[in-house]
Image (cartoon, rainbow, N blue to C red; front, side):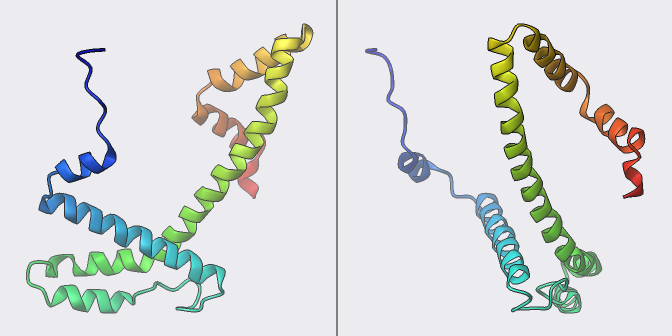
Length: 157
C-alpha cells in the first residue's frame, strides 16, 4: 500500500472544483427547479395557500411580458409562457411518480422476501418461485404493459 493515494474528501473536491459560468448556471437551475417543485407541492398540500390549486405559481402572461422585453429572449417568450402554464401538471405528475415509486418498493419487498425464502427452502415452491421470477424478469416491461392494458382491458379505466 506504499504507492496508494488516499481518497479525496468532498471538501477537497469542492475546493479544487472549477467554478465556471456553466456550472453556476446548472446549480442555479437545479435550485430553482427543486425550490419551485417543493413550493408547488406544499401549496397543493395546504389547499392553495399561495395560489389556487391547479394554477401556476407565476402567471404565464407575466413571464411572457418579462421575456418579451428582453431582445435576446423575445423569441422564446410564448414558449416559456406555455411551459409555465403546464407547471401544475408537471408538479402533479412528479408527485405521482414519487408515490408510485414508494408503493412499488413496498409491494416489491413484500413479494420478494417470500419468493426468496421459497426459492431457498422449498423443493416444489422453489420451481414456482423461479418460474415467476424468470417470467417477470425475462419479458420486456413494454410487453407486460401491453398484456395488462389490452389483455385485462385496463383501458376502460
